[in-house]
Length: 144
Image 1 (cartoon, one colour):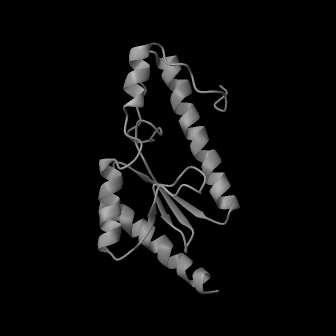
Image 2 (cartoon, helix red, strand yellow):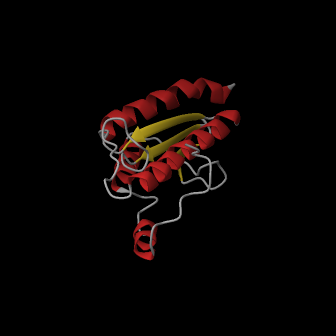
């Protein structure tokens, strides 16, 4: 199945309207992670507009980009589900989301960034541990 094609056309106007109302940023898991990182003294940019994919959290000096992915929308291997209704349509739609994630990851890596993905189901403290560890690992590169 081609996951790089144009997104599937919503089945009807109601579906299109419902999808357009889905939050794209400042979701509860994202805000919780940001608060935990901020509490630890880490400072970052939110939805950096000049980076591929507009990372949810960007540590610009360390070049660490963090995306907080929803289990449904990004096909979590543990919690991702496929709706029973319109299954083929959803399979294409969600597959294209994942393919788009890989494209933006590759673009960021090409620019010298490290990319981290955090699942919405991850505990904020554990996710912050991973992010902080990567940020600390990249610190020596900043001073070079």
